[in-house]
Amino acid sequence: MSETIALVGCKSPAQEAEYLHILSAAMPEEHLAPFRTMGPAERTAARIAVVANPDPAEVAALPGLVWVQSLWAGVEKLVGAFDRPLPIVRLVDREMARTMAEAVLAWTYYLQRDMPAYARQQRDRVWRPHAYRKPSDTTVGLLGLGALGTAAADRLVGAGFRVVGWSRTPKAVAGLDTVHGADGLTAMLGRSDILVCLVPLTAETRGLVNAARLAALKPGAALINFARGPIVVTEDLVAALDSGQLAHAVLDVFDVEPLPAESALWGHPGVTVLPHVSGPTDMDSAAATVATNIRAYRRTGRPPSGVDAARGY
Image (cartoon, rainbow, N blue to C red; front, side, top):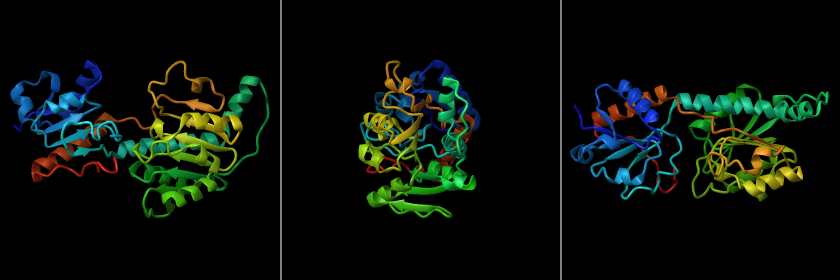
């Protein structure tokens, strides 16, 4: 039996019990325990922590840690949070990528078929068909070409949409028109009928979608943000919606979550509010990925490839 693997950061006893059960079933050869139940010797001996938004002080109380496995794809809250450098391994999971790609395609169809207009007409009891716009006449600008972005691009291209993918540095994706850097971003925005945000939150992407970049979109374009709230400047977004520069925004992520009841976004006619559901973690699939990573570490003695602290992902 190897040393205990610490489970750190569950938000409730029920979640802790669920995660412990699923993770233990995926790797029965390992012994996992919630941080709160581990004694001093177990905490000192632990070399791996599996974390879900942990308290950094609890991670600091595991002095023998070699690496940290996150249960989420987003790790912006973990980078720089610990008292010492530790490899942080993001969850890269095929099921999450599939689920996110499904959500991107669904809400892209929602905007391409002008569902917000029909929702408004239903409220006003107006019967008025609108002209059909083909997917092939609709350009989707995709911010981010990581595992989630490339999966979404594949679904969009397969559905007949024109897709332009943007990344910070050059990246070739088979069958996809790609651009990079500041000039590439400006060019992509000018072509986009729908802008989809799937970039990680870093110092460079915080506020990336601001007034100037919203103004660079085609007039009447739409936005889908399935990344992180602070990537889009909320005040600039509302101003673009109010002016008509932006027709609609589908938002699944926000600066503060849950979205406060007093937020004007709830009642804005140009906003669809979702409760952070576009790419939920499938715990069975996530546990299988975590188990694969831990078994590889036991076999080789090397932690999996971790987050680049300088880039933030």
